[in-house]
Length: 336
Image (cartoon, rainbow, N blue to C red; front, side):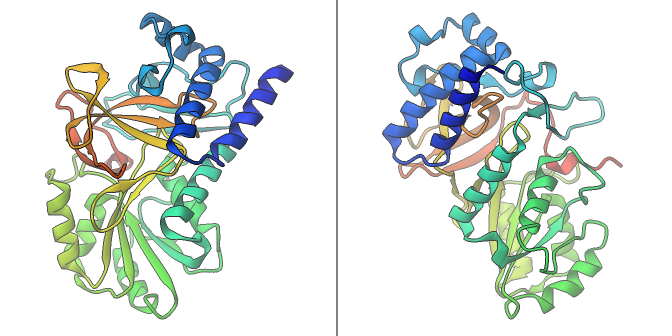
């Protein structure tokens, strides 16, 4: 890496996590676009194919959004940078996983901890209980890494992974909430439903966070039906959601209303289903495109296969997936 690259990268990194205001976001998004056009050859190739060179890009809506599927076939990383960590998406045995190559893992850690703090407060004040595999079982899962990092903010608390010991989770919960402080139970959707069906009850003060669909483990249901089932089983608990993916370094979090909020360096745009270069006004449904400025050394502009709707206040909801999209998601991290 040359000195100019290092200085530009450091400048952008500082700006990303100190961003404020919509106008500033759009200005910074254009800076990041130009940086990635110059330094990420795969993204440059994609932008050139669409005639979206910097001379033709003047606003955020002009920026080309790379389909997340490209992470399955190409290495998306700025030229000359070393891979320090790799995240892989889950999928069926026959499908090809997406690979997110991290040149600077601290970007993920900063985005996670700053974003979580904005949504929930200091993570060191929480006990985290997880219905996912343990880190040793899947070392390339961004979800498991995320949960483990949150746990590490206060390792003295009684955190734990309970996917293979739901009885142990049942025994742990009553002793934690609410007397011992804040507790979050986060997990794969099918695993949360398995636990809820076997051990329904009163869980005062508990926050339950689900992180995705059934992905082949159970019959798919709407998020509204899922939350109704969890609310019925986890009496007195709050039911929340997390929206993230391997190809992103940031997460969106939803409260009980079911609407996701993003950190200031992340923005959701809803594209027209039949015209990927046009964007919907708030209230209309379409494909979810994401600007995640924390993806500084890969690609910050991604077109997903998720369907969603943006609200006037900037929050969004996820409505499902395109019919042609691959079966993928965190619930497939474990194979039978």
